[in-house]
Structures are given as structure tokens and as C-alpha cells.
Amino acid sequence: MPQPSIRPRRSFIFTPGLKPEMFPKALACGADIVCVELEDGIAPRDKAEARKHTLALFEAPQADDGVERVVRINSLREAFGIADIQAILETATPPPSLMVPKVRSPDEVVMLDNLLSERGHPTRLQVIIETNAGLEAAYDIAQCSDRIDAILFGGVDMAAELRCKNAWGPLLYARSRVIHAAAAAGLDAIDVPYLDLDDPDGMVVAAQQARDLGFAGKGAVHPKQIAALNDVFTPSAEEIARARKVISTFEEADTGLVVIDGKLIEKPVLRDMHRIVAIADRIGD
Image 1 (cartoon, rainbow, N blue to C red):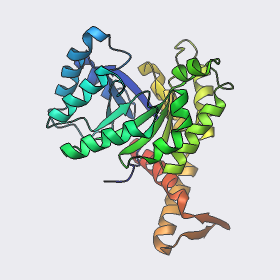
Image 2 (tube, one colour):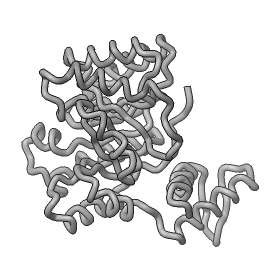
Image 3 (cartoon, rainbow, N blue to C red):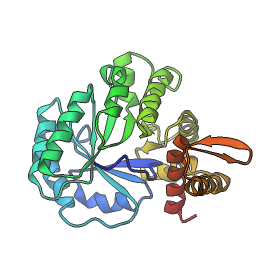
């Protein structure tokens, strides 16, 4: 099983599985991740139809356009989630990645991993931590499967579970635990979308706070948010140049420790350097 992929995950946006005609538009909006929605955005009566439309999207080969394609299934603790997985196991053309909501324990992810492996599907996973139980188990969840590429923080549901205000300060501890879990497993952490479309400045501040805490990107609820999010999470030209220098120095030294510009740098920083270069490649720098 391959290790977690290193690629830009500065922004993501949902597109409804019930409206497959919106998928190409979402792919063209500039987001690094486009997630086809089967969970909260789909009414119970429409779940089966949305599932059918969504899986049909992946019957044809996907373009190599740099956009990561993900499908958010329903919770594996619900009948709709089980139906989602059954349908994915039955198809010969599974989505490249699944976003798994409301994960409470590693057992859920291990079960899904085993089912995908038994079927021979290479499908990757992104896990949402948005429950109190999931937060308590975040470290173990992040470590439980080699299929996981990213951990997402679900702030709205988390705030409801913790009975706190959905704001930066009250959720700082929860966000920090998600960052800790993701970093320990070498995964990207992605922050919850900013819901107020009429407050673009507030969104930029929230994105900057998330970036400085260690998040690799943040969700969007509308395409008009994407450009600003990408800008916040795009490294500067100096950071890109330094990342390339660090990578090349390690390759030449073939050791776990190098000295660059008088500073000791250890090998664990390489993942972040490769992520910076991946972003640079995405923007053509």
C-alpha cells in the first residue's frame, strides 16, 4: 500500500452528487480538491439517486488536471454509509478517494480498508474528525491505515458536541489535537469551511490562523472563496526556493541530517518541503 500522497490541498469544495452536471464546473473552479457530496448535502430520499449519479462519474477515465477527486460517503455507522460502501465495492471503477465523516474510532477505518483491499480497490481515504469520540481517538485514527492521506477538522459538528461556540478560540484545543494527530502520521490536516460568504476578510483571517497552526488547507462553500484560500496556503517564492534547496541537499547528502545556511535540518522536514514543491508545480512556479 502506498504511503500518504504529497500534493496540494490548499482548498476544497463540495459538489452535489445529485447534480452530476455540476462536477465539471467544480473541477474548473481552481480548488485543489473537489468532493462529490453524498452525506449532509443530500436528503435521505435522494441518497440512492445521488449515489448512482456519483459512481457513474468515475466510469470514464479522469483527466490528469491536478485536481484531487474525492467522494464524501455517509457515516459507516449508518445504513446509508453501508449502502455507499456496498455500491463502491460492486463497481469496477471506484472513486480515487473517499472522505469518511463522523469517524469515532480506528475500527471504522480499518474495516473500510479491509473491504477495499479484499475487493482490490486502490481507493485512498480522507477522514473527518468532528465528534468528541473521534477527537479523543484522533491520534490512533490517523495511524490506523496506510490509505489515509488527510485528516479534516469538522468544526460545526465538533462545536455542537463540545457545546461551545463555533469560533477560533473555543475550538483551538480541538484543532490542535487534529494537527498533532495528522503530523504524527505524516498526513495533511485540512480545516473546516468558512460559512459566512459576506465576510471575505474574516475568512482570510481564519485561513491564516489555520495555516499558522499547521493546516495545509481549508474548505470553501462557494467558488468565490477559492482564490483567496489558495493565496493564503500558497508558499512564497522564497519558501519555494528554500524547499527545493533542502530537497536537493538531502538527495546529494543521502543522510538524515544536513546543514543549510548554517542551520541544522533533519529529515522529517522533507514531507513539508515536498508539499511546498507540489504546490509550486501546481501553480507553475
